[in-house]
Length: 120
Image (cartoon, rainbow, N blue to C red; front, side, top):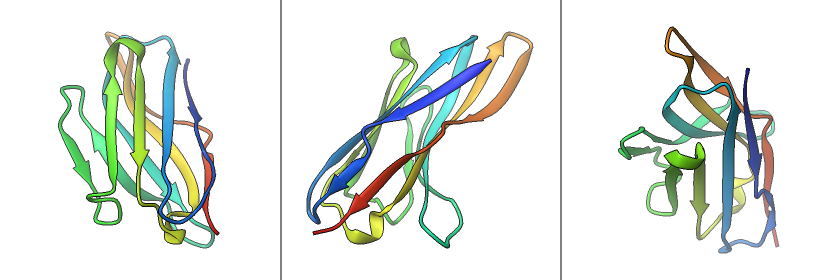
């Protein structure tokens, strides 16, 4: 079993910053891509940012220039630094990881989500 646990969500004022963390635990052989997605009320879940095991990153337009994704492979943890936040960033943020629990298995796993609210 692989578990992803997010932390760091909360309420922030417009223009403020938050740092989300997601730690993977359980049976882990290798973690490939890790990413952050978000889902606002009434909307579909959307990609925010991805990072490969080697550190290559991809951002969707919504976070480009304001968000930074990073990871610590030794800790099986991925981070999302969010700066200059806007009310439209309000959503539940989900961590996602492409994991090999063993050398002969591979799967895609989700965290339970952490609420982020941007409001004055």
